[in-house]
Image (cartoon, rainbow, N blue to C red; front, side, top):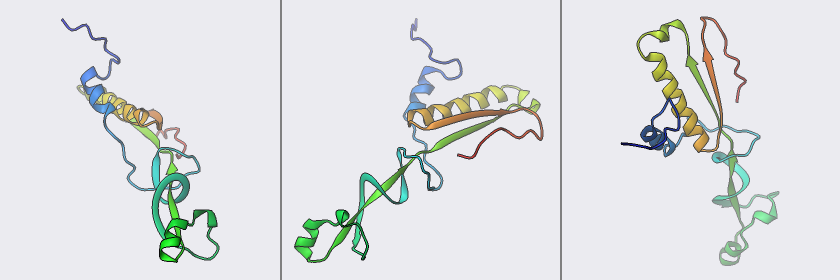
Length: 142
């Protein structure tokens, strides 16, 4: 007899354990004013080292790697990666067409999976349901 407590009605514990280990990756890189866990493609000011590049007049002298300068007699600048926050938005179709069989139940389970993945990656998660044709969900762009 299994006495393990079920954490949620939508996802069984085995599925929940698998989903918690999954990572959600952004399809494209974007800039955002909020700082977060994902590394953006452009340079930034975090402590995550990215690469070196040649010094250009006007670069911040604090970013010059003086050890490399001493060896090569050429200034190189350390570049860092910028971290950005991702906003996971999940939209569930709750229209009458989803009431056929277990379609809506599966849609809720899939939405829960995406929400868990986002939360486990310490992301902001928003969940919306659209019920009527032509209804615009109240989603503000992330």
